[in-house]
Image 1 (cartoon, rainbow, N blue to C red):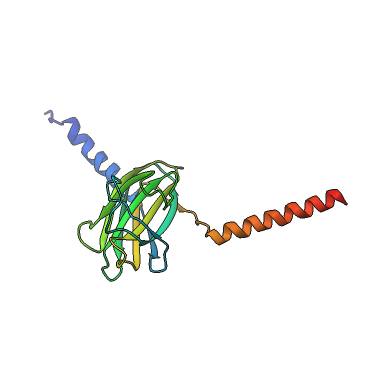
Image 2 (tube, rainbow, N blue to C red):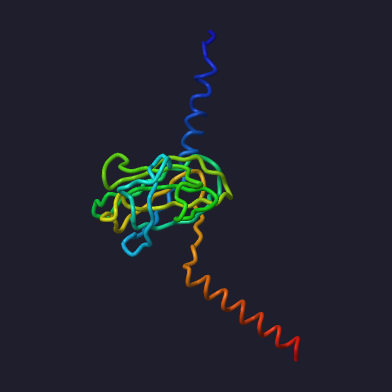
Length: 184
């Protein structure tokens, strides 16, 4: 007696195992932040088609990062206390003075006030900048950001302007000392 066995029924257990393995390899990382003491900027529309009149002088915080594996990543920002948050993603560089440059995706209310986020395809080794901000100048506070995808999220600290000034002063001092040695 011969049984009728289709290829799809033979590979169904393998497909299920592969799906579970892929799901198990997805990583979720959580970052806590607070825009309360943040600098201000003029926030763009989610589409980066212009600057929002309501988003003038809004506090923000930046998380620079790369990912260890290329693929689709899910970002979900939860505002602690339910303030009206907004999320943006920039690629390669972020400059708050030019908020329409290098924007990838933006979102407000995902799916309601106090939640913002998106899904975006990211490339390993590329510099990205997640910007947490508010809808308008009265919206700021603590938040929790979850990023999940096929790889690790590798964060990098953004130096404060005072750090750059201190570095420049240090380089000047080292240069002056070297100059004195050569003259002496």
